Length: 601
Image 1 (cartoon, rainbow, N blue to C red):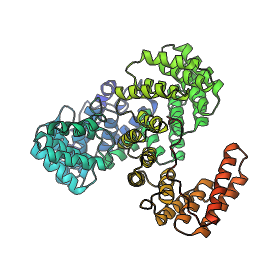
Image 2 (cartoon, rainbow, N blue to C red):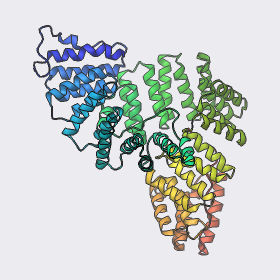
Image 3 (cartoon, rainbow, N blue to C red):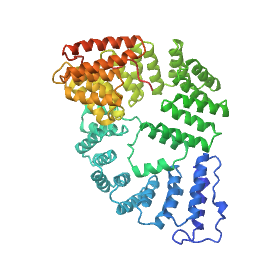
Image 4 (tube, rainbow, N blue to C red):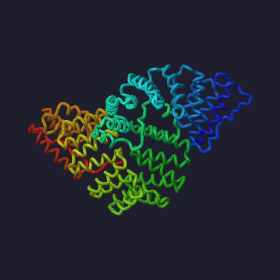
């Protein structure tokens, strides 16, 4: 790697300047201070500046284990492993009682030097036996070296420390598979699956286990969800993750942090992140393009557009900037300008099939069915692209051609059985065709592949209820709340069934009221739909006075809203319900249908 070549001499040179004999003996030909700075030509400016800062810190205090260790982390997270090893070794020489240095030495040597890595992990575990991820690293490395006895001991220790560590269950299952203890492996893998793993590795392992025990039905179930290429479940390692998030300064790490902030709905931190990135390199179009895509991810098309436009000021022939500008304009509802931007991108590079698909989808939005030909041609040019087939299926759905949409969505899943959006939209198409049981199967796979996404659980609950399995629907929606939290759509879906389902055994007015009250609290008691739900819940609980009060509040909110056909239909519906509540009649509605249309990407 070029970065390694540029910096290799630098680390060793710093060590030579130290007067501490435990680090390196003084050298008569030690380089002058200016010679310690590496040639950083071609590196991202932020990384070059950070390297200079960390190197200066080590030069200023060569006896500091922390300074050496931090420099090692900076090297390691930017994939300069040999130099990271040198830094960690010096940190360990300076402070042999800190478990982090042998731990990090092990992670830096995991590729190609597993036996050394195992010894380092063993030493780290001697110093700190209470950090579960460390035991998992040890177990994984032992397994790579075919030391199943040591691997089993390490993974078992990890589980004793953290009973919800998915990677430890998978590690023990791999040991069980290696020793042909198939039932034990299946038990551990099913336990891992219940914890909501972040990848489909568990399905690949379950398919392997069920094949070996001869269970063809279970084999088929998990084979459909298994990754086509090997993928490993990431290990939750809070110590190293915190260091990586703190020290990563390249655009890659800024994108990682942006995703972290997005999951926390922390827009302020995302804005600060990209303001810092721009401050390091304001004249680099790549930085503005990366910032633009980051803001698109959080639904801020206005901020994204500003960055794509700035990238074009710096480089008017930047194809990625024109494509980004098109996406930002589309997100802003400026369809004609979005089409002009993507056409400019295609003028610069006619081979951009993904841009051509975007153009086709935009033309369809304008009512130009010729857009379908553009998407179909690009799909033909990309026969192995699941995303291209998915976009074609969406186009068929947009045009009201459900049979073609279903066939093409099926082709998408044949290419990539783990395509979450395709499972979701296939389920929606099946639901709209009243094929509820089949729809539920695909929504179940959405839940397995994206366990923290509330949409899968909501649609699964709706499909199961429509298919007559209300008890399973309630369980699915509750599972969604347990996994994804008190998301409004899950609260509404579960409370609605509990308040209005025709089956006495399904309804639970008290629980429905609790859920509806939480939903209204989240909505600050200003959402007519949430108030209607609360009215129905109170009616089921037998409190018709409160049911009438909440229904009237919903009516007042609706009467103050904009006069539209939808508003008038909602008013008519809630007035009919109010009349029922005034006669002390609860509402019996069952389950609302899934939203029409397919999911936005």
